[in-house]
Length: 250
Image (cartoon, rainbow, N blue to C red; front, side):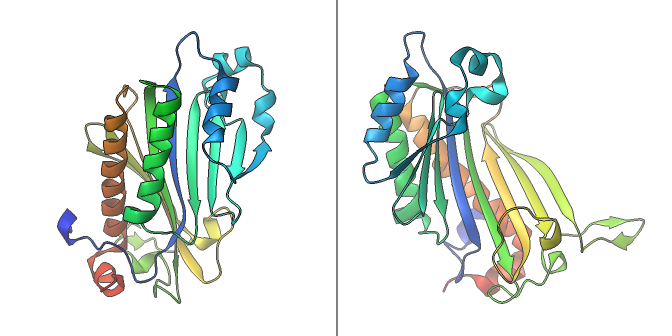
């Protein structure tokens, strides 16, 4: 396994279709969702606004059902469609669609603004869950990955190697406040809009444990940076050392 310092900053041709951060929080009793959503949205001028169907769910029903509580009410999209912000009464999500701008001066900087904006609108907000997810599509032409058999994956049943028509999900504990869920699917079992020549989809989700809670903006910023490191490590484990060296940007 490659150490953190050995991981490439990026690939010559990245495989990222979408990168997402979700922040869930628990408001105080005096919290007014409509005021929060309006103030937060005002910080992202120039984005197109769309009201989502979940906006019509009554507040009492939302609060009674954990599956509804954190749904977004509005969606805001940048003019070029590459950035999407979703805001709900108890959540904020930020999505970066391909082409991915890189981390240090791109997605990472944008997420720093998202977190700062949240804490400006609700100082000392109690964050109860964080998630960072990357969806990657490896391709036969750009990456010379023709299928799961070209990755660092070895699965067999009764000594028969499984490498085609495969959908693999596995969870890993990677830190005191971090868990990862990795989903790997051959293209015939992948969902969503998949680019031409894609062969394998690698979906990696890093998220906090169930007892996570912080009111410190610095904790949130630090968690996101560390989650990005864990996500990279998991992706390159799947890709394998040989492929990583072959595809890394020099």
